[in-house]
Length: 395
Image 1 (cartoon, rainbow, N blue to C red):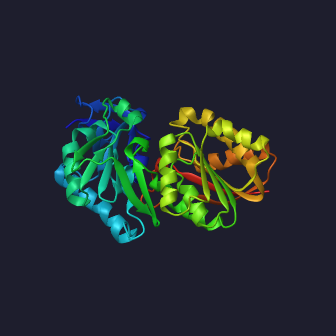
Image 2 (image 1 turned 60 degrees about the vertical axis):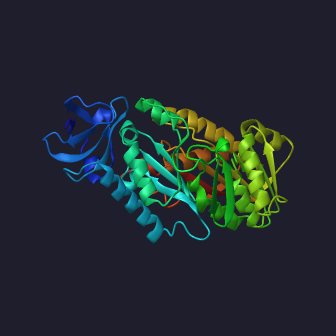
Image 3 (image 1 turned 90 degrees about the horizontal axis):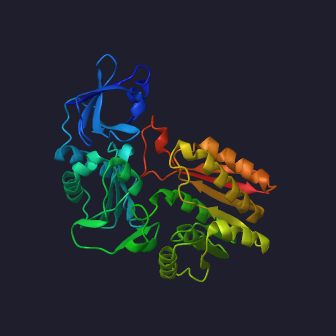
């Protein structure tokens, strides 16, 4: 087996449990591993640190899967890891339960399966294979999911950014069981139906579950704006929480149509108005019209895909949120989110402080939400704690 030797001074994060070997940390590679091959990772003195899949074209050259020397990364390995992930959800997080049947079963590094994402929608699993190593072992992975997760259908969905970097591409396809065209599931007693034609990433954003519940608790009697609403899950939460009215805006016709149907299903369509608009252009129009909202929610797509995009992301977050601050009525609240892992929490909060100053508003941070618990991370893996949801009181 090929060996990847780590430079002196780069071992400590791996020793502490960080799952990534960066290309810049590699002193040399012994052997000629191909993309997706299993490699041993050793320190400068030859001490074994772990093993994982090799990605020669990526800045993340190795993602460690095992720290048990000699462990085979075979069908039994994936079945064990899937069973462990399922045990965490069922016995500790109580997922699924009577209220929630949609959740994340495998969160890559957080479940010791870096390069693999598995989301569950009732009896359907949506799977992303993010590395060449995972893609080469797709048969074992799909079989382990079918045997462990109790699903009837498995859907493979693309992640173009990751897969292009890893040297392969996929199209959405059913790899096990009956064909499905809609992802149907429950979350906190809401019943959702999401057509695959309107799905993003693995379909839905389970990571915001706890933040949506918090929005629901703040919404009673409030006038609410939900910007970048996608299917309007924050809107539904606010409406059920007693919001007087909700304006939900997004530019995806499919997502808005699904949101309107889900609102109708929940008996809340009379409180939510879905509007197709480009948020970046529409916020200034709302300001000019003198619109004000007691609660404004901003949940934009990822802006910083890596550290080199941070400056551009800060500029966009600052501009968009300055507009959002101007739309908050005095004494109201802004809930603003970032799913960019490259932007650390302190950086995001500081950017919000600058945006508030731009808008001439004072703001107090009440809490900083994160991703829900079915998106766990190793303690040494700061990069895995990607979601920030700042709840800010505005005056």
